[in-house]
Amino acid sequence: MLKPIRTVLTAALLTVATFGVTAQMRTEHPDTYVVKKGDTLWDIAGRFLTKPWLWPEIWQANPQVKNPHLIYPGDVLSLAYLDRVAVQEGPREEAPINAIPLSEIEPFLKNLRVVDEFEQLPYVVALEEDRLRGSEGQVAYIRGLPDAQPGQRYAVVRANQQYTTVDPKRCCENSGRRAESLDYSGKRTWGAERLWSYQIPHGGGEFLGYELEQLTTGTISRSEGDGVEVSTLVIDQKGREVRAGDRLIAVDAQPYDLQFMPHPPSQQLDYDRARVIAVADAVTSGGPRDVIALSVGSADGIDNGTVLSTWRVGSTEVDRVAVGVDRSYDSVGSGNEVRLPDEFAGHVMIFRTFDKVSYGLVMDSIRPTRLGYALKHPDAKN
Image (cartoon, rainbow, N blue to C red; front, side, top):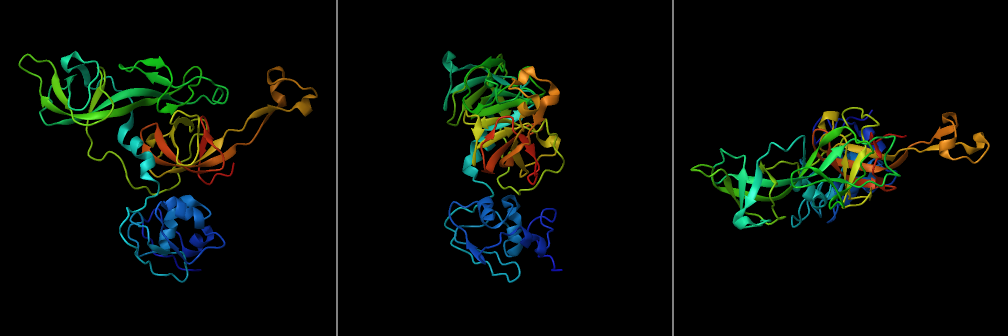
């Protein structure tokens, strides 16, 4: 038996012996690979491993690489597990590559978050000169910040979505209902959606959270007191216009991860609960490099880097041969219905996790990932 190769990442992720790693390699591969501009760690692994989400295993053949997220275009990586070739460093003129293209997910990292409630947050009560909208360089007046001090910075956010679980009996192929938006005060309203497009199951579902979108940021210039019942906020960043009813939260220095270690989920997911509930950019289907929202989060054992597979839920069809006549679905008994198998769509990697909701990037797929698709272990066979 071959001895294990020294790991270069966390022991929990990389405790695979050489013979286990080589079992994941495709039958033909070169001894080395030169990293190219535009590569991601997932893309490189997809060329040489049977399971691209196991890209950390490549670095077992490259013990000189102390941080796999600091691989640069021009670096030469060894793919020879038994007769390793020393890594050759390339020029450091380009940014290092990551597991996923950060440019694709930056708006979702910086500008979106999911919370259980928002009504208790401080809010914009008015704008200078009685304006209806405010932008960079203008002033907003805030209620609910009695202890605010000049110099403190806040993000201005707006609640624009309410997430609920998907009803598997009613979602999603034939539902024509659009996204459930929220108005300035967070109350439900119906209309075309700007960012997400998803279908609400008839009769609602279990509440998962409210999505807050960051509009801009501002700095407190004056506190409450001396007869003034509001704090003064100077909007100091370009962004979307601010209006009365928008909420405030403290600015986080670094509220999200920038590096990801792909791994399977830590526990079995509830099949009916773990679903795709939204697809970004106002569409109903997503492919590689599209962002989707999922109905599972940290409460379900999901964390950043978790890889899941997406599946079209198998249809229930009438066995017309057994029935003997061409009857419609509604006119036959339940004993004449046949449940078809689920159909694999692709893989998604989680990059932002909340309590009951998470955002993921579709990494690879053989068919579009649609609303209501089920989520399973990345190695699931059916």
